[in-house]
Amino acid sequence: MSRSTTATLSGAIPASNITRRTIRQVDHAIKLERERLALLQERSETKRAWLIRRADLVWDADHRDKVEALASRIKSQPGRVVARLTTTYHGCLFLMKRWSYLHQKVVSKKFKGELSKRDHMTAHCLLGIPPDEWDNEESELNTDAISRDDPEWEIAVRKQYRELFIRELRRLTEIMKVLDLENKDAQAKAKAGEFFDTDPFLNRTEREIASCERRIQVLEKERLLATKEDPEVEVALADSPSSTVSADAEEAPVASPLL
Image (tube, rainbow, N blue to C red):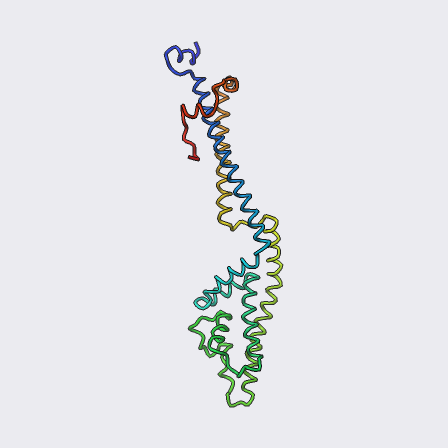
């Protein structure tokens, strides 16, 4: 006498019924996971479409905003901030605009040989010099070596500043030639739906998608093992009019990882 027959005679639930119920519960869990997977994939696609559109419309504005946020700390950490700004196209563009402004100041007819206190501070920050070294005699911005008694003092000071500012502008121009290509390549990839590794929402959603796919694989393996134990159960499930997921799920609920 088989085990299932013995169990039925003794009043216990037949083994085939237990296997059938288990498969129904696993099917219900798989259904929930697949619904969640579809939702996550839809969210990911929507976010990617939004990022692609954003890369096309406000790429420069987004990067200028990031640069401005970083540059707001330049007075307290000039060396560190300038170093980071120099590594990006938009950061270099920010620095170039400030150097160009100072250059226009010293070549202007209104320049009388001295930078304003604010312009002097700006120049030190752009050079990455911390506040406690602004009065350093060896600073390139220090014009004390030029005698004020010299009739051409103003011209000499203008020349010193101009050479310094032009040097920095040329240096940044050379860096930007490389970074411009890098920036255009990054924007092109973003428009193509790539290069979104740094987006927090998309990263989190992609991790959830991978986790959901792993759970589905585990559940499908469990279902396969259950049907191997009793192949006839699969046929019985298909032929049984009461084999709906909802009915068995209510009779013997299983805690799903989604709930």
